[in-house]
Length: 323
Ligand code: AFP
Image (tube, rainbow, N blue to C red; front, side, top):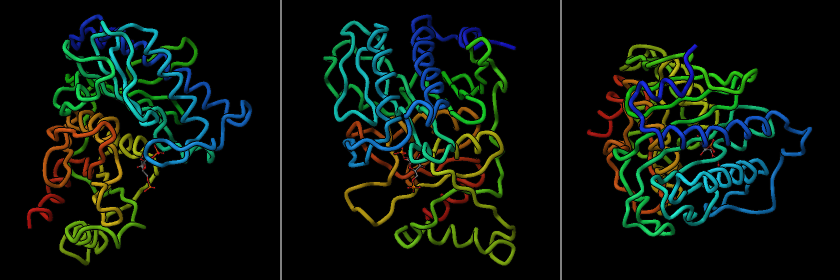
């Protein structure tokens, strides 16, 4: 089976980017090991601290963040990094060529129930003019991303990666420690009868989303004329992995709970990398108003609405937004 390194070379990735990706993934392998140790290593449960988003940090959030931070700072390839678990950007090597944004452990509420979690990342070029502690260089639209992906810590540890030449799935072979290509050029089926949304928020959604999901729920008795199935992992990385593998739509729309927050999910290290992966696999990713990857970020922790998945179903959903 083909190794990650040779797939990245075939996709034309420059050497320094390949080395950076391999460094980042060495950190993910360590996270995978810590996750698998669970209660044996005392890594489950919460800390007493909160991150900048006001969320209580899990022990594994803090551990994973530290692992990735240390390895990226040491590598020399990175000028600065931003993380869900860091209030501000973290300056690294002033001569580094790249910026990395990541969610070190997405879905960390799942850690204590031994369910799906993962690391999500995106990489852009670092502008030469930037100071390593200047957050404004991170405010680039998703179209500027040179590589993005996630590592899913599930029954197998799996990597989904794109450098803009298709989305490939790899599986971690723990016997020799490398990611092997197990599904090249994955394609999201264009049609689906499966959707993912946290339905407990329904009363807060905007009218267009209420109407769209109402029509899905009506099934064969409604205007869609077919039954839909619903799934919710409570970790975007798990839900997007399912969408990549067998199609579907994943929705985290804007809602009325907090007028200052434009959705729940973060643009830089959740929505953008997932949008890039899904688009490269033939799917669509929108806020409801525009393509996610064209949104110009205004803050490193900015939140946006996310409608992502099978092309034809996302297009149908967007028709409700255009009404
Ligand atoms: P964490 O990374 O803080 O665990 O949040 C996970 C997440 O941002 C995303 O991965 C999920 O889709 C979403 O939250 C689940 O949120 P709710 O189930 O609370 O709506």
